[in-house]
Image 1 (spheres, rainbow, N blue to C red):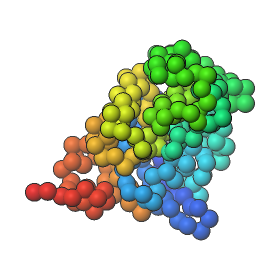
Image 2 (image 1 turned 180 degrees about the vertical axis):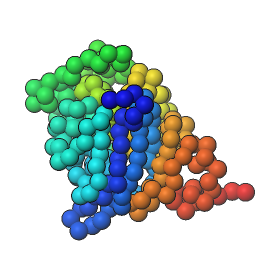
Image 3 (image 1 turned 180 degrees about the horizontal axis):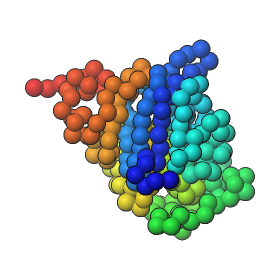
Image 4 (image 1 turned 45 degrees about the vertical axis):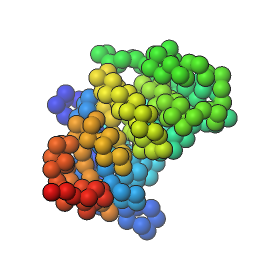
Length: 250
């Protein structure tokens, strides 16, 4: 793949749930080593876009291209093995498994085994993940369900890293977290970007998006109504008011 080409391209994607027409011809590009954020209210199509990229709810029309490869009718496990990991909304850790077992899942034979190391990018091992999240080190033998919400979010991110992805899809990672923990998630995303990872972030938290994203898309009723930099979005009081519920001032 040519270095200047985007890591991920979403081209004219139309996605349905049964007869419900959810995504209306979305187009998006995510360059390598960048954080792109999708902002929008509940029910506007943010999670459906994540599911469309991951193969969980495949588009009925259009295509998703990752590292030059079109995901045409690819099953979710093949997309994961290609280098796409998800930090799902609500964390979805395995509550009956220990922290160690949750972290080891992406490297199991069922998941296709550990991915090979990529030149020039950090390779995530159990030790590396525990260095990033030292609080998990202390809870390795604890059941996932016994962790606090913040710890579960760290576990969900750590589990995704164990797959050694090229792209992480993060669906509302700040949901239910305290301001202090949201700041921690922001710091983690910055470090992941510095390590060479790319992140597609779905959020409702405007402050988080403005502080961490390189570029922002705003979605409303299955269509993008804005694409630009955080500074450009901050200047668009009409978009903030109409589509994100932020009252315009001045």
